[in-house]
Amino acid sequence: MKIFKFLSVLIFISCASCGVDRVYTSASYGDLKSHTAKPEYQGKQEKALYVSAAYSKGKHNQLGNAEQYNDKKSIISANIHKSVTGKYYNYYYGIGGAFGNYTFIKGLDENVQDNERKNFFNVNSKVGINYTWTRKKFDFRFIGLEVAYHYEFGSYQDKLKELEEEYKDNSAILIFKEESMFSWNLYSEVVYKINKNNALEFGIFAGAIFLSPRERVNNRSSFVGYTLAYRYKRFTGSFVFSSASAADPIRGSRYGLTYRLD
Image (cartoon, rainbow, N blue to C red; front, side, top):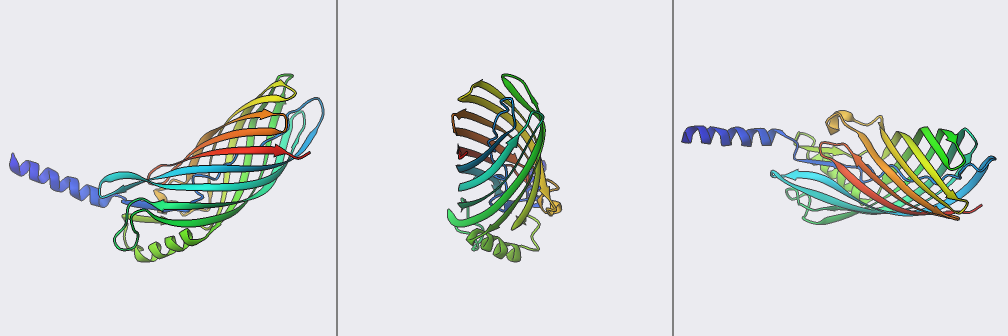
């Protein structure tokens, strides 16, 4: 019986050592989707220019020495975009930038310290189009496609380059350090037009990264989530939840405020 228990422990340790211990991705991954305010259809084509700011926080799940924990990140971002709505369509395009920090909660050998923090920046752009079915009190944006580009740089990316070189032969440490990321997502939204000054919106989305080294992240580079928004006159408050797939999940929450300029 003791021999059986001993062998069971050895098998467990061996299997655990064969698995992935850490996955470090670009910090922007898990925060690729932002809310895009759009004018509601009011009987004629509507064009609008928007500026927005958002605060995001995220958790990157890790498994170190069989102990699960979450690395943390926070991001402040700003965007400007143009959106056009017709009776059966909406399209938009915009640019933005972000600044954030990533905290390694647990150290890794002598290469990462406990609670080590690194900064990162990104510049980004997006373009999207959707089919819209409009009613007096509702806008249904059934089928939408968005394509986005993010370029990330900063001391966090420098750290990933160091770790990639250090652990290039270690299959338990995966580094996904894409600086340039093209992504796509399909989305659906419904807007309830309470009155001229108030509207509620709910949406869902699912997407992935183009040209990512999928074999480096366990053949997964997708993300899914939902959006909530409330418009009052020219202001729109929004919330975006997203969950991205790597070897372990990456989850993010984004709180935004948008103002319509024209």
